[in-house]
Image (tube, one colour):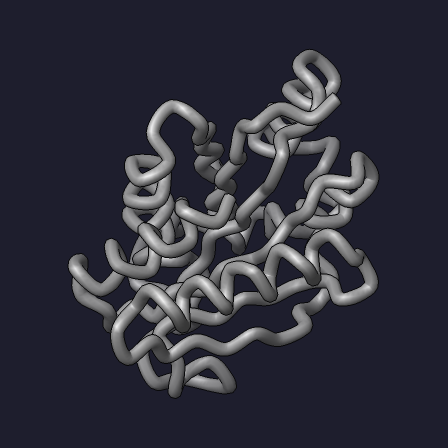
Length: 181
């Protein structure tokens, strides 16, 4: 039986040492997840990645059994059962790549009906509740955190936040999301 708990994962929170030439960590994701957790109150459980992406991309299957972060998700699932929803929080550099024009991007596995429905609900709420919302909904690449949740029939959506947004704007988006989960 699923709970009313919402799990928030931030797999790319840990940055590697030095100044890497690539985007190996999600600079705005930890604070975005904490803002969302605050909006959700006691319903949220936050999992913060403990290794940098250059060591092991925590969204990939090969890391499921070899990292504390992924083992903690799996152990919690086995011990307490699945959450009602999982939101995998990421961020991207401002004005870069396919996501660049947007403030927030929802990535889903369209083959998993409950996740697609959740993504549509989130997008509708954002467009309704956030003035001038600049949101996109796209199908994402295979993400093993979402895959693991789908094994328990848990809706899971990956949320990408634009790193150029200010704190108030992030709060508006996280508030709209919190009211839907």
